[in-house]
Image (cartoon, rainbow, N blue to C red; front, side, top):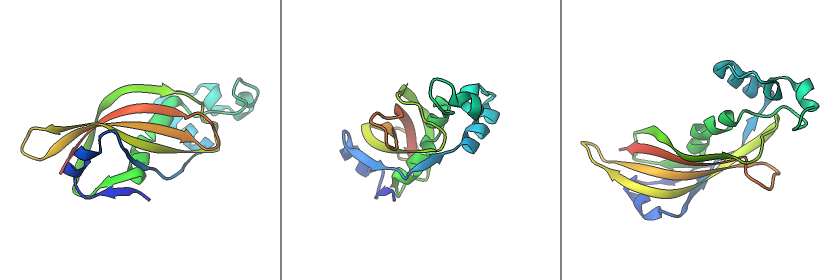
Length: 154
């Protein structure tokens, strides 16, 4: 269940602090295949379970960009800001794919606010830099660590 903050302005005082943890998400072969179809990346380590079983990871693995693309879903279940009506991705500062995600495994994300900057304009908004550490269930190292930059508006 998402941690809910009453207002966007309230988050200004949370720089350096955890924001929340998402629900677990299953990364199954069907999701991997759909991502391969959407991106045109049909490399055998992702979409050929028999060949991948004999490959370097012992099973098919999710695309790194698939793991990264789960962030909007993970954000939604990790924390919410009650007065925000719109948000847009602004970019990424740093992304590392630390541990491969085998098909059939679950991931979740832990979020920490790194920066909060008010935006000028007709609506109150803020640019937030959030560290997302995507945990692979049962693994000692994360699947992915990313610094995300988004703009949120009330």
